[in-house]
Image 1 (cartoon, rainbow, N blue to C red):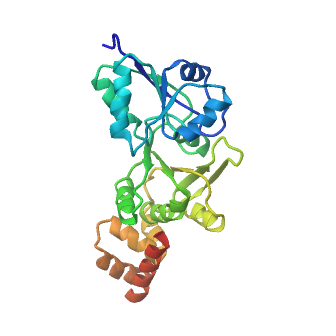
Image 2: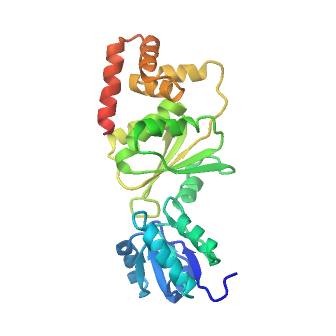
Image 3: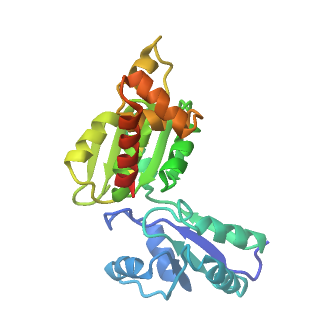
Length: 287
């Protein structure tokens, strides 16, 4: 299949602590002809730390079409190439999977070099069930699309894992509370780094915590799956939501916004105008 062709190595790199790299990964990074990196500046720090001088090229979401063809050309010419992301396993929430597909289509052998992964690392320290889980990566940035994505997962009973950026964390937790209700949650940030932190709370508790402590660093959210509610329990939880959260919940259930505002006002015993104002203020905070 791959006679005369090079190999594409999917090389896991540390998610924080530079010591979290395998001896095999270091050997491969030294021996290949080329390293394709998501951010060459970031990867150069790792290579410098281990005195590795292999040539670098960039491969990221904005140049993947052009660079993908170039890298496959090197592989077809017999060159050995290692693909790395900024942290963890390449191909997870980055364009690496596209390059793997291109290489396999051309008969190039793809070799995994396993190592750290932020999603699984957060899962095993979360305290939540690990026997079955779903990795969702990054949710959509836009609030309406994010709530729709969460609505598709609200009946999921397996543990859920998400990535999130610091500037969207509060909006995402707000939407999770609105759509999922209050569930067990672990928020992991800066894993394996100096300021590693895991906040084990409920969604509502984590929202309060990060309203008081500015979110910093990259986050992995591990959310408990749905458990069958006791009679009336789910309805009671909904009534405890803030107006904008309840409207978001009702929209995720399929209501149009005007209908959701009317229904939220009825349930909360508030004027429709007051609920509408809260929804608009919440939108402005998200943008």
